[in-house]
Image 1 (spheres, helix red, strand yellow):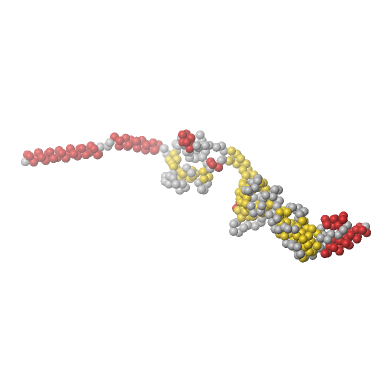
Image 2 (image 1 turned 90 degrees about the vertical axis):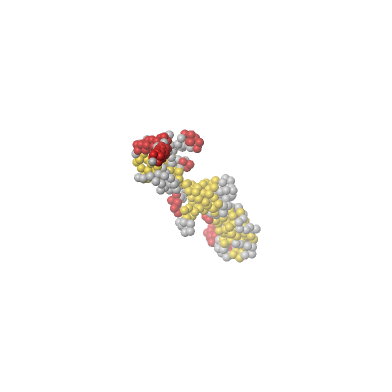
Length: 358
């Protein structure tokens, strides 16, 4: 009995010893745990000292939220705004270390007051100026005696011969007028001149006949100005009726630049606006012109308005069909604050800037 009792007492002592070791190792708080708890308590106490006014998105600071969470505007968490944040402004601030500013190459630029002016950049095509087109017609029933070797697209100069016409109606009228010139009767002379004009004879031919006192058998049709032949309908041996078209001469100075302005931006364009036109492949590439016409129609497929720009072409190096980049300068507006384009932060819905407060 004593042996069994002593054995039970020894076993109980061993179990108590093992329980003490376990509690001392696993249950007693460690120094690191105590330190972490103290730090946490200090942090919580510090956090409790700061009163959160609201939460906000730094990229959309005017919208305030009562609770933290993800931003509905950007892929980021909302930032708390404290009552004692040290900043009296309602706008959030971003503090960047000076070394990081140097490493990232962050620069500041001044906000200036500038005279704002609207600009519109579009693409255009060089085209013929239809107001500088001359159509030549047969003044009366005539025959084509000769045509110079020319074709559509040829460049011609003023006074260059195109064809020779024989007008039978002019022959008898010329002889009658020459006979009247010898009589010295002014009334008959004036009447004879008027008859030749009514038959379609140019005034320059009538003056030539009066000087030379001899009739003209054929009339040489010449180019009225420099340009390019748009059409040439007469050929040697043809018979022409009165008013039949024989040629079209197109002047190349000035030319038109035809552009299409979106109807929503039409308010930025007015007749007479200054225009910068850039045409690659010619020198100088940059030319100055002005808006000539805003046509009273809208293209139904592209919802654009045709606009014509008049452009000088003294050298004749601008050819219809060339493409051009056009910048239309609108009217100067009131003064406004201006910042460099690189300082703008585009969020997709609006543009922001960062104010450098030093």
